[in-house]
Length: 226
Image 1 (cartoon, rainbow, N blue to C red):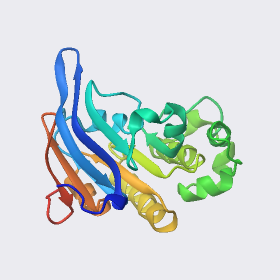
Image 2 (cartoon, rainbow, N blue to C red):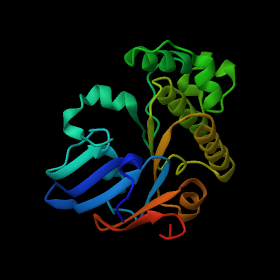
Image 3 (cartoon, rainbow, N blue to C red):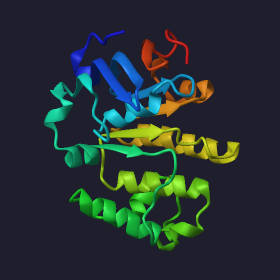
């Protein structure tokens, strides 16, 4: 489904193809991703995470076009784009040091004033986490620290790749509550890759369903099953 209101379109993908290792990972992918909260769903190997990486140019397609806010994605400086469209990967990848130093480093890269306390609060962490060594955090705490680091760059879009797949139910619920609060408190859009249909229904407003590297359906939650 294509969005009728162009102003509401965040990303537009048209006939996007990507081959890796002789395998077609993305096959003629066309989809609109609106502002708000979008869930990209489908089985393992469907190409969901690869598609997410294209949205901030961590990878580029072999062919086809991608636009962000109506402008070709290739015309954006990759580093500037990644500060505005920030990816939080499935596996935490924090720098050595403290949570606070990670947040400060991200803010510095984006030319923003560092405010670790605010970023930690938004990510659902107490202020004393700023001084904690990242190697002493639980997986759930590391995921929140990654979120705080991303928020330090004041992005317009958060790309979330299976953000709760390594967490127990309690930690998953806490992360989901944090993401829902971020949507309420900040003017920020979320694009979420998830293998969990229930999570997609809890967090998404728009659904892009993928199978075998292709988009098989897309539209508002309720019209397209998660």
